[in-house]
Image (tube, rainbow, N blue to C red; front, side, top):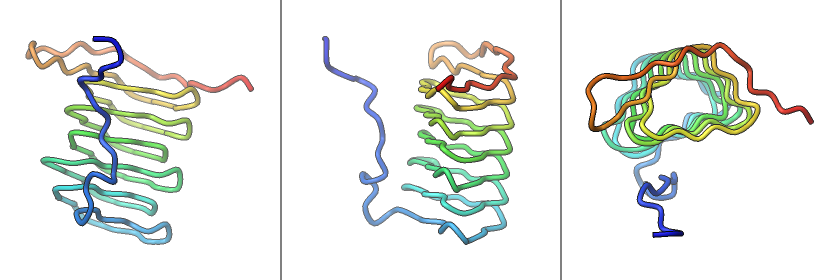
Length: 140
């Protein structure tokens, strides 16, 4: 009922012992496949794939490639498509050039998307697409 959230947010703390961190001054080239959590503070050039887990890109982080994970939290730069089978969260400093495929999405004012939004309904195989080429900027 009220106050219950059947779609709980995933937190990086849930993956104790299974968290990989790409430090702010580090650069990783190549495809990355994992289970658990990935915190990107640096730069990843390649595709990122998690069968189970979370990808979090900090405001200093950057990924150039396709991201596939159940949960994706972005506050940095992504050049490539993002496939979040469960939850996608875009924070104020998110800058995405690519299509977003999501089941549940949260977006904070200030996030910028240059690409299409594709809602993934678990019930329907067909996906609706909404073209987007807009900046969501705060008027502060």
